[in-house]
Image (cartoon, rainbow, N blue to C red; front, side, top):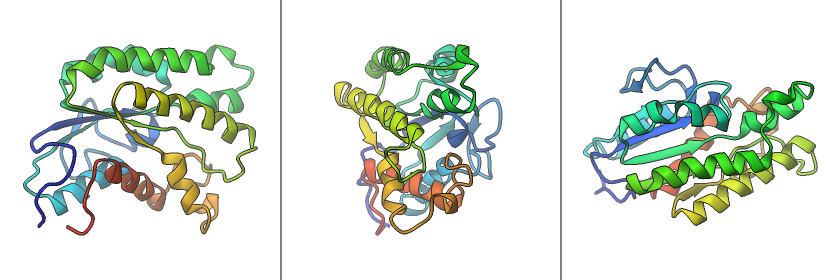
Length: 222
């Protein structure tokens, strides 16, 4: 196996937090380990690939995703689900529900998270946490829809810009998940990656895992 070339240092604790795309059936209350504890999505794929290529890495990966979460929910549980775990590295992917609720429940305005609120809340979490971390990874929200003029896709892109700008401002690695899906959609129909264009199948989760690993300089050749 190759020597470690990843940005994430050996023996690091990596906490991954987000919504259902991160959750994917992970165990409660804290998902750390193997044998399905991390769920059946991109988080478990990331761990499996790292363990396969870099067995000496000894990365401790913890999945704290919760389905249905918005950035408001992350703020509520931040002290217990991030700070108390004392991660060396932190990965955040949030924003899909912040946008989606404005389309699938337009009449329930109390649950809508505006772009301004999304930006302010996420930045407050990043600003308070970044000094405690060796590294931070910010993953954009996505909508598996190639038509950029589609209203939900257009709004998701706007929230993705917020995440990109925060990554630049706080010296974080940025994972452009939307761009990763856009590349796949030049050859694959959106519903072949996710029936509802939001919750990916295994191929979709591998696209997310690959984008994540490329951001941390994972060497696929081993």
